[in-house]
Length: 454
Image 1 (cartoon, rainbow, N blue to C red):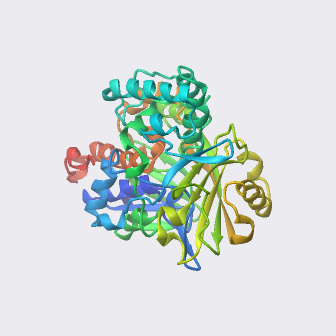
Image 2: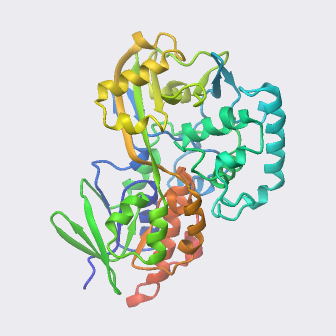
Image 3: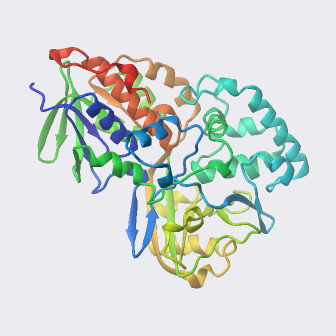
């Protein structure tokens, strides 16, 4: 087999584009294949009538996102294009929004927690600070929490810590069921990113990083890869109109998709792929004729709606508060995120019914919403975010210790870090593993692996 490419990357999300970018910097010929007509994956945005609509939800932090910031700097993206998020987070409890969610000051302000729960929150924060050095973002399996679920970890503390802090955060940002997903990745991520007051967003839509990466790459959109087979000398991609051969392939897709595409994974690969289950995500974007937002004494960009208070929504996001460029002057843009337990039924429902159910639920949080909506869009991701189950956490060390092979993997599920930083890190890791295998073969020079570590 004479390869047509050095490397083929399947998937033009952040992980795949990062891997392709790094491999291109190393002097290899790389092509990215994307089934959708656009790049970005779960970080895609589209523009409509002056609104910038994010189909997922994203914010980054000046802390805990080192690889992302280094990549942005390399691409020449100025800090002004990654401005501070407007507004704060609040939790809904007993008929009103309680600001200060996920902020260390919650032990004083309450943020929806009872006085006894605040004392336990202080105890939890002290425990986390004491063990902080054990929560390395790239090794979630090596922490004092082991494979304890979020619910099991929360059982150490007052019930409110689970019901009005950990569950709402898990539900809104990850779509997790706290009885299934493990606490170590969550606590590690919270320790890394710091309080919401420092979080940032992308000025021109959350697809900014994906668009900048794709500008310098050979990306083919609208091309589905149906299967990948590998041999000693490389791999073969099977498409509708034929096959493409490459010295290596990076599957930068969700684990269930990678398991379906890869014809012959190793036993360690197959076990980890099967363990990396995903939760679905569903949201409704409401384009408003005025800048409505959840009622509170201060500007809010996210209102968490705990499962103890609401079984339809997980949160309400005021995108025009998050950044004013998301909506035209004098207008508003709201995101209504569905609760994970509601999503399976909604995935099968007509869009009009989905919009009606979510907007009806949101009216008690956003007065006047029923008369302000100009148009609504429904966004679904069958593979929303990796669950980080106990089984996946146990199997990850063997998966990470496997030898480089013709088919590699990238995605936030590789790192068990459900955030774009996890995707960036996994893309860089996949690139370094490809180069380790190809280094020196057929006289093709490869850059030192250390140079690729973001």
